[in-house]
Structure formats: structure tokens, C-alpha cells
Amino acid sequence: MVSSDIIPHKHNTSKSDRNKLLGNKSFTVWFTGLSGSGKSTIANELESRLISEGILTYILDGDNIRHGLNRDLGFSDSDRKENIRRIGEVSKLMVDAGVVVLTAFISPFREDRQKVRELFGENEFFEVFIKCSIEKCEERDVKGLYSKAREGKITDFTGINSAYEEPLNPDYIINTNESTVQESVNGLYNFIEKKIRF
Ligand code: ADP
Image (cartoon, rainbow, N blue to C red):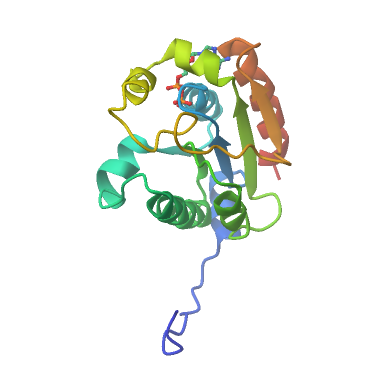
């Protein structure tokens, strides 16, 4: 509970001033999908495209969050919930700072993603479902985690012994079983580009 003694200071400068300074709107592109579905790959390529167009972006992912801010959290359901809550709050601050934020986390629970959405205004949060069959993700096994999970060396692994709740109404869907990285990024870039200009 937030104390009633915490009274916000009224700052002179707002998000819209920062957006004007940078020349574009800011929002969060929230990738969700199984491990190995392609979230990091697509976020990375999308970031390169946006930066080359002069748009300031930042990727939040396991590397910069799980090793720092959230290093105290594991993979139990309650820790996953807290992980996503904090990432949502950080994304909100960064959007307020004027940055286009790309988040690449499995974020398996619908309710947690919905709560993050509720932190944002209209057109400030886009949920992008990176859809890929578990069989394909397991075949790719980019980080060798599926085989470890199958051997019982990892518990709570999404898709194997922990649930993944698909989005019911995502803003954009990419099926990486069927499309190449280039096709996936091109389509998403066109979607994002329409949202970014004043
Ligand atoms: P995640 O971040 O979801 O765990 P990664 O991006 O680390 O997944 O890995 C996805 C793997 O799938 C990469 O090796 C990538 O080259 C491959 N891949 C194949 N097709 C696609 C596609 N259309 N989009 C994204 N990745 C793809």
C-alpha cells in the first residue's frame, strides 16, 4: 500500500514534452511467447530498424533484468508474477522518459500481462504474441534448456512443467513456425511505424 504521505511533486516537464523533443511517441512493445519462439531475435532486429530510423529504443530482457533488478527472483509462480510486475513498472518509467521499450520475456500468465497493460494509457502498450509450437521451440532448443527440462534438471520450465497462457486478444501475432525472421520483422515494423508518428 502506498503511504498517503507520499505526495507527487508537480514537474514542469511532461512525457509529451520529451516525445516532442525526440520526435516520436513512446510506448511498450510487449513480446510474449515460449522460450525459443523468437522474442529476442525479433526484438533485436526490430530495434536495429527503429534505431536506424532515428527512434530511441531499449530492450528489456533476461540479461539486463534477471541479472540485476530481479536477481532475487526465481521461477515459482509468485516470483514470475513479481518479475513481470517490476518489468511493467520499469517499462512505464522508460515510456515516460520517451523511449520505445521492447520487452522480451516469456510472461506466461494472462493476468500478469493484463495488469501491466493497465499501467499504460491507450496506444502505449502493444502485446505481441510470438506464436510457435512447443515442438518447434524444442527442436530449436536455442539455449539447451528444453533438454535440461526433459532430463528433470530444470523444474518450472514453461511449456514442459509450467503453464503458458496464450494471449486471447493480442495486438499483433507473429507465427514463427511459418515465417522467416525477415518476414516477421517487416510485418511488425509496418505495424509499429503507424503507431509511432504524431
Ligand atoms: P526467445 O527469445 O523467444 O527465447 P530466441 O529469439 O532466443 O527466442 O530464439 C529463437 C530462435 O528461432 C533463433 O535461433 C532464431 O534464429 C530462430 N527463428 C527461426 N525463425 C524465426 C522467426 N520467424 N522469428 C524469430 N526467430 C526465428
